[in-house]
Length: 293
Ligand SMILES: [Zn+2]
View 1: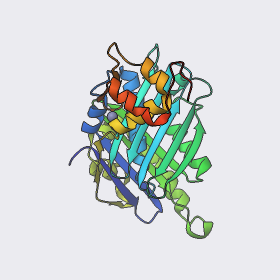
View 2 (view 1 turned 180 degrees about the vertical axis):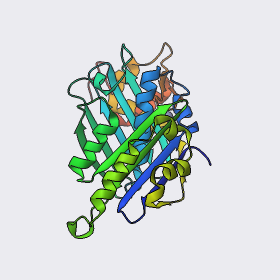
View 3 (view 1 turned 135 degrees about the vertical axis):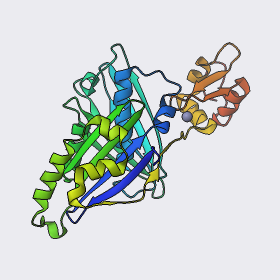
View 4 (view 1 turned 30 degrees about the horizontal axis):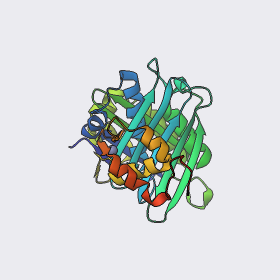
């Protein structure tokens, strides 16, 4: 059974569905060019696992991201997953290193964004972080913004990151079918017995059988997850253009070469003085004093 996989599943006829993800090589590729200290790697790993989990919940063509911006030692957690199964992510921090979400500061917010490439739409949900754990914050997000009872377990460590999510579908006609509440409480209790080592180390079949064999697990075929970055020379040039000519030239080295390294994949893009001039050529002629003619 390959690691780096996302599985959807249902628990019998309880109206409870779930998603399971486990990553190893894609997670290693994300960290290959950055030396994250252990607690930061743990925070990023759980964020990446959560983003991959959510792609199993929504039908979309595009990308889904989870972003935490903080003002404390934890500055940024960002994880992005696409409908095609690619994942990428970065973390920024200062000092410390930060050990939990609480180190993001008092007014930290989590943003969950879905960009639908086909329909050109962007949907964003925000949730305040008032605890230490990402899973709890994300459960609140589903509870409050989607009115969907959700339980989430996330783990990172030993070179892997993983997640397991349960969600109770809204019953038809808005009424919970009898027995639903019992099944939901039972499933939540069983999920809380899952240890991090089991989630990280065991196959999806073993994890779900151990937890939910009495509920009758219907496991769907898995979808492979892999690390991929969407950066390109064109996109980096676009960022430089948005900074403006003055700032772009200020970033240049001694020979007028601007070098930009992608934070996600470590790829270095080089633009020499001619490239930079061409980048701003269509932008009006600049006089010596920098005013537009
Ligand atoms: Zn990149």
